[in-house]
Length: 337
Image 1 (spheres, rainbow, N blue to C red):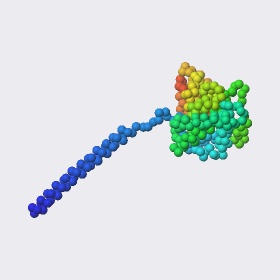
Image 2: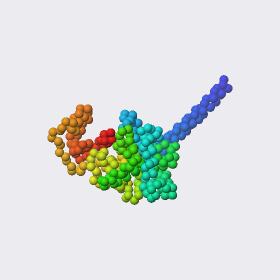
Image 3: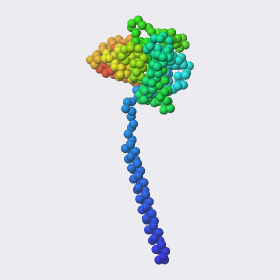
Image 4: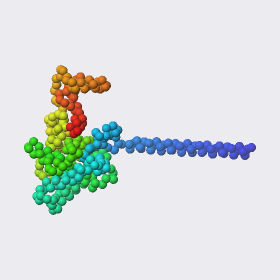
């Protein structure tokens, strides 16, 4: 019995040591997990770019609700559009036309000789390509997402084609108001069915995800502008291009070229705001179909507008001294249609 009891006492002692060892291991594991947790929290700093992207994708839930309102019809611009769109039947014509724009801008910089010259024009075209390659990091940072497998050369080619297309459209308006309607045979040949395509192009150039950075247009204009002036001429040309879609007058303050992100941003900046002391008079007898009738209909649907809102012009809503809210997308879509 003494032997058995002694053996039993020894086994219980070993079990106690084992339990203490397990407790020690558990405590060490908990401390290690706690330390790892604290380290992860310490490192959880959101990585934000130095400058947020200015050209973003439209959320998919908005596109699914009205796909036609957010996708281009005849011309794809920038790096957010899938390549399959560019080869579609409705876009392939203007994709070919982009090459013509590159050729015209290069030859316009050196009009002598009149035909394409390997010695004169090809070096300038090479400089434009090298310029685009050098801007690739900035270009990628301007878009919310660019496929990682897209090489710098592919980005440079797309930017050169798309930017020359937009720049060519802008420079068409450089002489507007002076009796200069600079439309050539290639312009007249671009048709969509039986309709002239340029109204639809204007609509496509105002889509959020269908943009090129304005600094790319500035760089190309400096290289290919043929001494037409400073980069501010691009702002004036852009305002001329979008003038038929603008519901209000030009902004009184000048728009600085370096402050413009892209054409849609230029359109946004061009919408004037009313002076703070401006107080329009309310119409006494609203006509049928007027804004006030629409407001009453909206209130029945649960959308109430403040009484201080006034309507001095079509497509604009004033709220006392508040900025004017303009229905630009609707008017732009109607104009393009």
